[in-house]
Image (cartoon, rainbow, N blue to C red; front, side, top):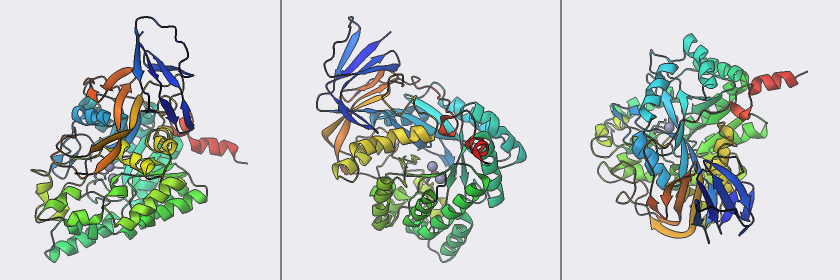
Length: 477
Ligand code: URP
Ligand code: ZN
Ligand code: ZN
């Protein structure tokens, strides 16, 4: 059995920070040891020096879209390139989205995405299921998918005619989720109203990328978030709002959580760092910044940082969905509604959120919680992942808080021809990445392997074997 020790570093978990050595045996963490404690060592023990560095659980990005068909093209990172880029940035697990084909079954969608990822990933991966066609059969299938470790389902209040579900379909899916222990993830934007605004803008001859933002106002995210929360309350299922971008939506989540609702939300680095003005770039450059929900004015960024502090935002994921500018974003020249929606980011999440530590907005422990532990807990990966406790998978990142570097398309590893963070200077960077006991990045040199990553079956919400709805029912008088 291979053995290694990460020594002389500061171990940071969501619980606290301590000087400790981390002993790894095979694929698992064997022990946290007092610094310098003797290890019965054979010649096989590999030593990794983490002096002056932070030793943290590997990042978990629960919102990626590799090879996703969208708007007549597919996102440009494959499972091979996207997971490699994720590893470069200190992420050791992704949870991507399989899609139920319209007119087809969720199981078919899962098989398609499993085949795409199988043997290609550099790090471990799981799947959520996007329900694009909420039929009786699809609802029945949810139970089997949950048994197979696909324990979360995304629904869309946006994109009518493509991925959209109406309120009745949403409620039925939520009811099914409540009975099988699944979590509903929601893209909360009022797509019916947005489509009216989009048609009006195009009819006025306004087709430039800036209109993407103007036709998706924050209030329509707030309204949809409210509706999703109400529907989840009626059904009694856990709800997770994805890619939350607007202060209006955050206020709805905060009110629901204050009232004790089982509601969680994630935001993404783009909603913390990037301004709506990027959509108004010269020529067609604004297309590079088109994603949904759209980038917001910077006042919303402050609200998002506050939400990360109060835990009304529990997770930072990337919504990594890259499209090259050349040949892909360009599909929307003259008609912003045809620009494929999505931004690249899987490689930069740990560094970007670490800037919040640098600027004293969050603690190092909260950084770990937002990027690893909380996503693991909410999505049924904990305590296998998201922690450095003995017995956990040895997914470990050695992070150098002093490493200065600049984000750029010239140096990133994502298969996309631009960076939305071009020229942004980072303090802090990844030194070493270990995935299930295997070195993937060593002293900033890539040692990973396509196919090392394995599918991870996730547990039901709360890590329990019975749905929370049923637990609640048992407790009721
Ligand atoms: O613009 C985005 N967010 N593209 C990816 C698909 C989604 O809605 O998450
Ligand atoms: Zn979405
Ligand atoms: Zn997404």
